[in-house]
Structure formats: structure tokens, C-alpha cells
Image (cartoon, rainbow, N blue to C red; front, side):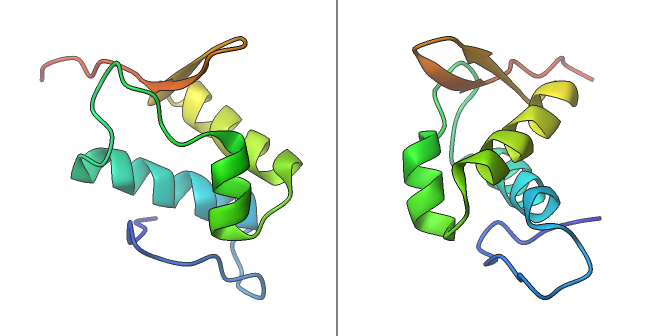
Length: 86
């Protein structure tokens, strides 16, 4: 499922908010909002920007980690993973 990088969370939609956020963040990374090796917005900033609970933001980030799109560094943040050349 493709997401618009500028989309807002649809709390009444069929897709769970954490999946929506994961898709939006992945689309923003693909668009180049954050470069490989650079930190994405903090959990706090994402909570405020998207109006979600911190647990929802953490779950979305976990999906991106599982997909290899980002990696987390404890006490430092979440960073965009290097993409292998195709």
C-alpha cells in the first residue's frame, strides 16, 4: 500500500494508525526528507505532528526497523538505513 508523504492520519480509516504512520514515514524517506545515516524526527516531534500516542509512534518505527528502512540507536534516535544499490 502506497502512502502520500504529506498525508494525515485517518483515525477512522481501515488501516491502523501505526501502519499509516509507517507508510507516511517510509514515503518521506523515499522522497528524500531524511538522507541515509541521518536521524528522522524524534518520537516527541512525531507525536506532536501526527497527534498520536507515543506507543503508536514506537510501533510504527518498529515496523520500519523490521523492514530495514531505519535503525535505532538507544539514547540517540532513529536513523535512515543505507539502501543497498540495486
